[in-house]
Image (cartoon, rainbow, N blue to C red; front, top):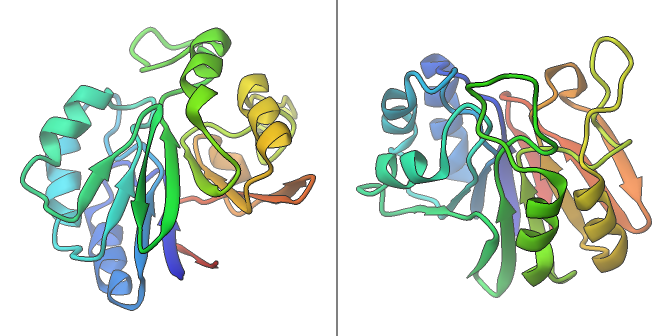
Length: 198
């Protein structure tokens, strides 16, 4: 299975057009949140991606709410929004969790605290690809000030379940970073498009 994965598009419609073109070579597309910027431009960003006909898994970022993403993708037949739940494509399971985790300092941000994240991750199993907006603590999560801003609940779930791969975004300075938690490869995607072969 060939996966095209990206995060943090932030209303870049030119990049959305490139990703739509790239998706023709993919079996599955993963879009790991932050299509909008501070809740603005979500509809336009999703509209610019909706030409993707490959099955596409989306999670909300902290710049858009899950319900708004579900509404924006309602007419996009290839899209599946996940948040604390899973789906299966060609026999491969995918589990998704969106939002900023842990809670960010911004009042506008769509966030979950660690307890909420832990509860939502309860149904996740290691045979699924883990699709996140926020990275696990101490992996692909270093901000420009050197602080690790990832989630302990996510890190614990990965350590416990050991999926093949976990993808995320959220921390822009860590775009392109890769790490391992046991047997699990963790990738902070960024908007350029990352190819993953399963």
